[in-house]
Image: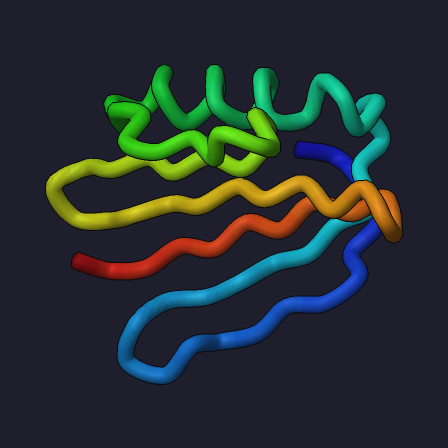
Length: 82
């Protein structure tokens, strides 16, 4: 996903988190990112009821969470090892 990097953090022993201001319109970010993740073999596991652009995906090795932040126009990608 193309965009401007806001922050990147390591979650010691667990994974990492990246926050971007995406080039893609924010209302389409979750769909596009989800399609990319699914193309790599992940299955969608969660979707927040009140905010359809907060999603979780799972593979045998990783959990990925994609969270859209309307307040500041960013999206966070959290990857955790299983």
